[in-house]
Image (tube, rainbow, N blue to C red; front, side, top):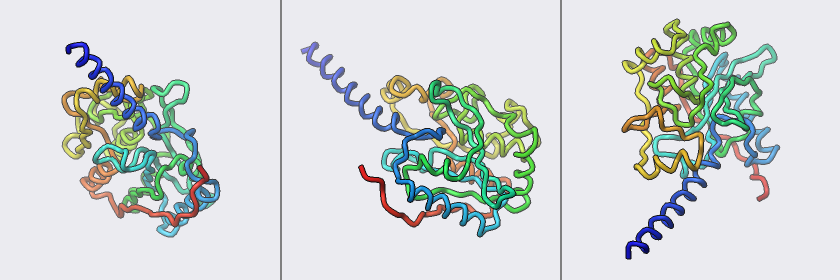
Length: 266
């Protein structure tokens, strides 16, 4: 009887581990090297639609978020997995400033500037989330990102669900938060930013039971739990919106639904 229970538990854990593997291993967060789900024509169309949308709004600076997983497989409260800064360049298009984790070592990140087409390529959804700050702050952020101050809050030790109130790890959304806070408060010391952020910033809680918390890091090395206590708290696009609203810096926040073309053949 005891043996049957043990075998049942092992089998159950194996099935649950496989479920986590499907949900997390295929999750595209802070990377540019994921296999495209959509064909080249569709991706090109989506990229142009996004650039044209920002240009029509005369955006100098925007924060754009993409979904790297089908929404039904994302945790509750998470609609997008990667956010980046978009800066209008002299050619009338946009340079995209990202934090990406490595491929050989996914626990180390770097700051990478790429093009709109590169940003769109890993998307798993037919929309993006856009945050347009007020014009004065757009100008200020464009200047900030072009200065030596940009990137001073970067922590290369990566975690998919990093805690924004703990300095040990960082993901793309937390990096965006830290850089925004640094520009607003003219402070690049992360420890001082962490002291100040709780008064105006509330992260999203990721719900996970003890088994999921135990198996998660085994299934996907990016799921580091060391910086979390009883509550798993991380930064989402919605949290970034609320933070900027607390500073009266949001002009518009919206979802851009692309006009879809065809999906790539399976």
